[in-house]
Length: 390
Length: 194
Image (cartoon, rainbow over all chains, first blue to last red; front, side):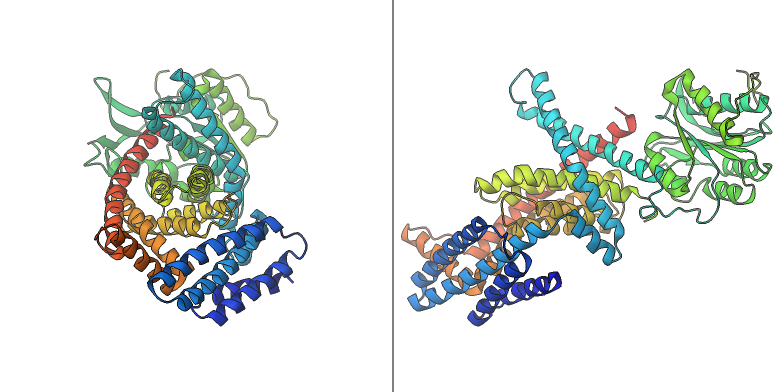
């Protein structure tokens, strides 16, 4: 029955768009059949009356216009044609609007082998009330700040900016949530069938201390006897300004320059930095020389790696050839979702660097759990694996 | 797409566009404000350009259009064929412009100009679709004759539509540039985590 209704609706639309009067009559008959097939009892009378009113007004005005400039007979004919066409279109679209819901679209998208489109539509529908509420809250907040019943017009750009930024944040969170749940229809991990160990991710904004935290944790873990390898990327500074980065091999303590700040105009990969081969070579060597079943430390994965460049091939190689027991990684918060999606890891611990002292304890706990679930960490010293003073 | 973010960005920004269409768009439509599409165009442009600047993935603008059009189906305004076509047209035009220019500011300006210029043309197309060629021609003749009764000998309807499309293109280019600027500020806000 549903398929028949769909067929009659399609034919009604097609007939309504043809220019001849018989086609319009057929279109209206098919539209009526669609209504009877789709909603034999529940089709609202109000919708029919409204459709009739719109069609009568549009057809009457058009008929009069044609009659005034041409002949009355022609005007009457055009008026009838327009009436039939608009009525048919209105009936079919009203039925479609009443019958269409998220489930229908989801199923349709799945049938068309476009499951992601269906999921995106579902996510959009679910987020609709939240976004509407956010708009209202932001509006009220702005009004209160300007001590008026309504915000001033000059505040609108700021309101728009806040809303867009909030939407971006929700999109990131939704992606992260989907990745954490291992949403198979949304994910297509880069690593394919390579097994991924438990992952501990240290997230935070640029300059909030991800690298020092990773270095501290690596030092403590090495002191406690955990086998580990990998690298961190400390910032290079001059006169309090960040001038670049270097790679520090955690096992050997060797260093090599990785990136030099040159400004956005001359920078590579849409960054203000120019990258140097020595740093990548040392990072590659650090990952290649690691033992099996150890903790792999990588600081940090950025947008370049997420596009499959930078350190990514070396990380991928280490994951497939060294089968690390756990992966400790540093990255910016906004890249987390994409990273998790690429990796497709099942066990993930996310630690916020801005949690202070709790962050270090959380990383140590997570790594210990990855090596031996349920095992408590032994009390340990503070020697730095790379010979750095703490 | 290997990353899931294009899907979530398209869903969320499309949803934001949909919210604007369901609220502001419905109010404008119910109030019978002429050229409501031209007023709603920059709102959609802002969402399209911001999402594209935050995550420049090919096809995302088109998907946002599908999402916003899908949400528009639930509009209280009743029949929404015109706005749905307008949303899809705007998304398609911005998608083409952004893809052709590699998601740059030039793409935002070009996409904005084309998207808003398309609004009067889309209106014309809708009139042709609903009233037929003869009905639309009848309206044009009647309007010209009515104008002549008042002694006004202005340009013909096609010229008026073209002039309107030109003005809309200019406004669209400005809106596109503004959207790109706002998108930059949004990106900085997100990077800064504030």
